Length: 381
Image 1 (tube, rainbow, N blue to C red):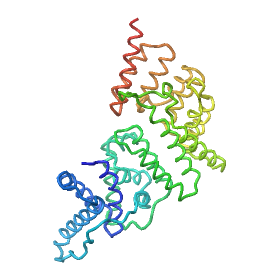
Image 2 (image 1 turned 120 degrees about the vertical axis):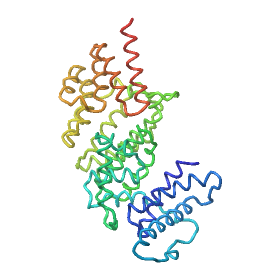
Image 3 (image 1 turned 90 degrees about the vertical axis):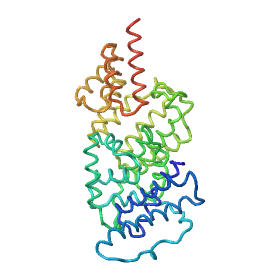
Image 4 (image 1 turned 90 degrees about the horizontal axis):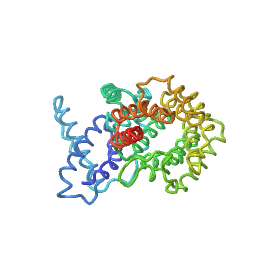
């Protein structure tokens, strides 16, 4: 069973049902039922046209559910409404669905959460981690969003800012999480940049390209995470880096700075350094100051503390870190790194172990556990 194929076809099938008049919640349920049927049937009898098969089955599931509901009020035969069998149109509706899910009736945060769940393919747990909230809280938010849009005709799309936020979170989860969605996020952002002349769209695309360019060097052959400072920079994709920097420079020249452009500028400074020791940390701190002004995000402040530690020394970084809530995700990992650089190996080892316990995925947990073991080995000498 090709689960990647099923995942890639889901948005298109969902879009077909919505265009045919199904309300979003009912369409989503029908598509999920069709996917379950595909998992059951395809191993023994794979279809020649997977997309057409899914569209036909999902539409039938939707009609069956509609008939069952309508039967309580009236008896009608809706067989004639079934679409004819055959290949579905080769139309990519994914980006359109992102805009439709960013519906004006939803708050931006609810629209992002709903889109990530329904179209992006992320789990409630992954979305909760991205938003730094408990999973139960996020589940309630998604449920409220579904109730809000139930029965709404999706004829009025949402705004670009919400769609950019969704694409950014999908890319981040695909880049560092359990599901590989990074390449899909890049593809959709390219489409959006081609359709909309907006500096923040360009900034997000540049940011994605600059991060994606380093992807091959982020893991060792055995799957271990490789920190930025230790990566083999010859494995970075210089074509993507050049494209990302060119797009960023054009966006910055328009003098309408936004958070994605600022993040891309930081990524460009990392990409432009021949070695880790030659990184322009002073300028990176300046860009983090801009990013803090734009977002006032605790995660940005956490990353800024690392940059301050590199630019002005570990004690300056620890002073910046002390201003933040120690319950922030990855706070312990940052504190461990800065304490290690300051020579406090006992505290560093303890904090690395604490960070490993809180790590959101197995690869990060393994990396932090190795860091704690390395520090303890140094202390034992």
